[in-house]
Image (cartoon, rainbow, N blue to C red; front, side, top):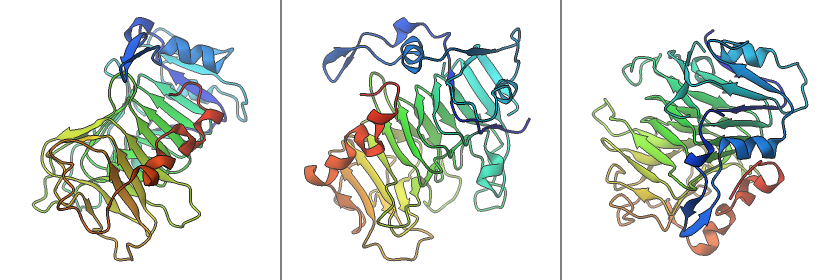
Length: 332
């Protein structure tokens, strides 16, 4: 199979083979807390059915397990992936892998979530298509496309050189995840929070093969003032090889916020770009708050980006930005 599409109503994919002791009872912001782990998520979700996927299980592929979920299902189902690599279409131990590039982001995606109410824990999503020459037709290689509402990823990883995470639309939560890429590798018009708890939310920049710096971490597509979408990065770190922009203005109301994030020297001094966007910048909300590191110096930032005040950033600093208290099984 070329992809793993998900179009049922309620599905939770959890890697339950990870020991709960790995993530429990850790220090967070100087305070000892119980950290999100697979058993905790399982208990919070309250599923009464578990589907096993693995070489010796009833379902040998992720797609077969998802296909077994009835159309219109309204109950949580846990799809438990045994450790391993699932090629076809815990982080480091269990991966869903495909190798496709395309002129179309949807067609190239290794894993696609179209359903509402989705949870993944401890899984790597990877598109390992050979790196093509940028600006040629077949250079989009999406690792995961998330189009459903109320989707959460805990301790997951996303790998691809180009257009890694298509955060298409809906409210999404990424906790302590690793995202790797170079060109527009977090993009779409999702209403999403990328947050750190016990470990780290890491963004790793791969080298850009082009001579001119055009690579951007984010490309957000907010199109109107009434649109609630936006990308919010709370703490975590950005590091890697080469130079990259934090993001690019992709629509007239693009909204991206980095707050309390460590920015390494891989961030170019201008910070942001409006490459390929020729419209006005008056309504952009592209900004940083209390970021640290050699890439956080605001002295040479583009004039239309913002160093946000506490008042400016307040609406983005909690899960209320995504109405998370209403739907997340576990949050901080």
